[in-house]
Amino acid sequence: MKLDQYSDCFKYLLLRDVIIKINNKVIRTGKIKNFAIKQFYIKLFIENNKGHIRLLELPYPFGISQIDDITTLDYNMDTFCGSNKDLKCKLKFLSKKNVSKFYDTVVDITVS
Picture (cartoon, rainbow, N blue to C red):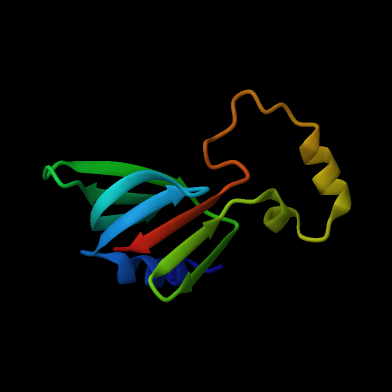
């Protein structure tokens, strides 16, 4: 996916109240005040209900989709590997001690 497509998805979310979930578990709620796409991360600046602005850094997803008011960021290894069975097998044997909280997950950003 090109950088412009990422930008378009997040422009839609600007100044809207959102709920951000990882595998259906809420990790952040609030209004997206700004976003930045730099290096390997998408940085979201989210204002919570107390007026504090928090930073949420999301690594680039392997896939992104937007249906109605839900933007889905796909970090699943199956999406990354595609039909490459050798790569899938190798990934299964990697150490999972220090993996990101986004490893093999789906992040949903829902406009509330």
